Length: 219
Image 1 (spheres, rainbow, N blue to C red):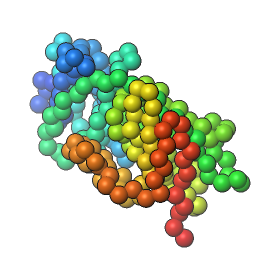
Image 2: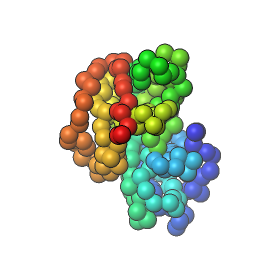
Image 3: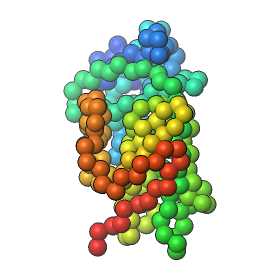
């Protein structure tokens, strides 16, 4: 679901609940770039504002919860998470270099891995697996990001959540993490903790394209 063109009417509006300045890697302000806020749980809830001549943007959020903030320009992109509880939020946004997130999802021999939704929550970076279960997300900002794959068969499998560390040349995967830790990851990322997930079970240490699996549903 792409971010809409609905705007928050600029940073001067009293209704804006999220405000920030977008800069490039050299710290120069970036004008004319849409910044989008998307709700984690209800990704149809999106609000977008375009940075002004001073790089400022303002977003009027109403529903509380976890949001992803994203922006992109040329081969640079920005992504972060915020926990909106109704209070004003000020963010410092910086466009980063980008990389790719690639992998292949395996379910089981009698279940197709095609058409599985794979995405970074609260962002425009999403795709579906091909007939072989392969997926690729391009132009993703470097950094530590959550990656979610929606289960096509909830009776047998739960959603798969991985932590990916993206660089310009490679990507490493960790997980799957328990789905109950997903909100904790988002909250910790928003608070800029260096290690948002301290304990990960069934760790997949993979660099580059990884072979990922869904955890089994509890009986």
